[in-house]
Image 1 (cartoon, helix red, strand yellow):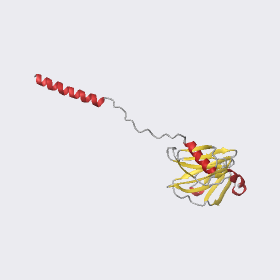
Image 2 (tube, helix red, strand yellow):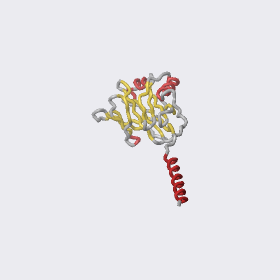
Image 3 (cartoon, one colour):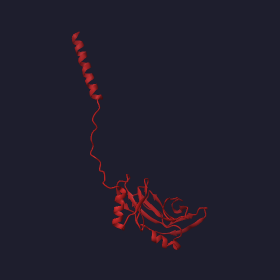
Image 4 (spheres, one colour):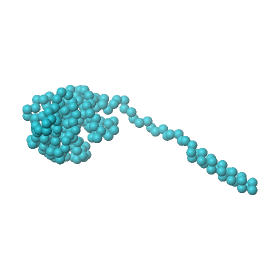
Amino acid sequence: MSKKILIAALCLGIIVVFYFFATRPTKPTISASPYIPTTSLEERICERISAQLGDCKRILLFDAKSNLVFAQSSSGIIPVLTNKGFTDFKKFIYPEMDFQEFKEEKEERGPIDWRVKNNVKKDFSIIYGFAEDDAKTIVINSEGNIQPNRFFVRDNLWVWYVTFQKDQIKLPIKVTVYDTDGQIIYGGNEKEN
């Protein structure tokens, strides 16, 4: 009988040892430290803009949905494509929106202007431009009556933009612009970019 007790005690001891090894906390594995840039994305974008355009005043907007950043220089606004985490600069989207050009061409163009950039990357295109204060609602008729995003820049000036998950935007663009009272102040004109 003592052999049976000894074997039972030995088995119980082995089970207890396995239990302690299985339930004891393990040390977390130390992964390689992630790359932490020494400058922020805003600083890196401004450095690149300064190198290409002469100066960079500030970043106006980070759009998480489309991975766009809108940066302001003394001459205008330029959209910048980033990666999904806003940690890396991908490319500038040209042409830049020029403040002086917008002011000078007011009589010819009306309360808004726009640019089209097809195939910024695979399945990604954009329409963007300036709008004056009196352009309260913008509808892009040629793309299914879409209303673009917009944000305020400065005195009587807004930036508006809309992105598309496709390589090409239908040209010419047809836009209708409404004022505060819902009256059409611009529309039906076609403009090719």
